[in-house]
Length: 229
Image (tube, rainbow, N blue to C red; front, side):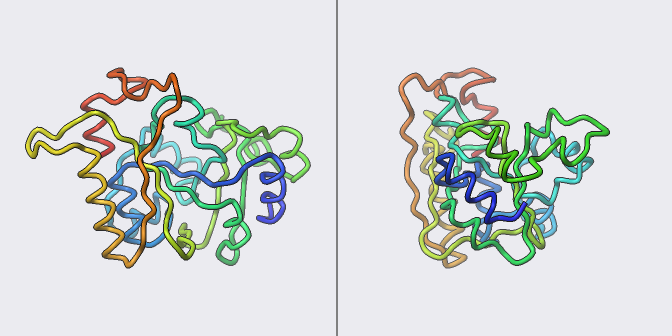
């Protein structure tokens, strides 16, 4: 789908930002590369990234070099932590109008974890602005906004980079410092080394958010913190 067509429909539906959540390690690699990057691109750059559960499947499906974003802040809307990480990059939706040359915008009909062998491209993605308009609703988690760009990279727009960072109630025992403070230090250092400016703010959770609960599925436990921070 042409970026301008996807942009028009998404704006009509109320989308204001492209959201991409990831771990601190992977986010620092993005800042080092001065871009959002596909998992294939980060690997090619020999930089660090946190393993994800469906990496092998994504490679098999041919989406390893795609960049996935959401039209909504999942943590905020679902009132739970985002399983992909505590660092949320936010790009203005108008960024779709200034993508690198030869980029393509796709919107998934459902999360790729539910794709089946033998499905066609049209089974997986909306094939026209009309089909997207008929089905897409603001806040629909299954409809990822996928960008395919040369080299699997999306250079950050000029100006400060907007990041929302989760703040779990955990302290690194070896240093007696909060994981939040250490994460800020890592992200800030990576940005400074690349000459980037961050607009980094602490997440303010909605009433009823369960991200602070010590539950494997909904909250932050020590294992999750060690992986994501």
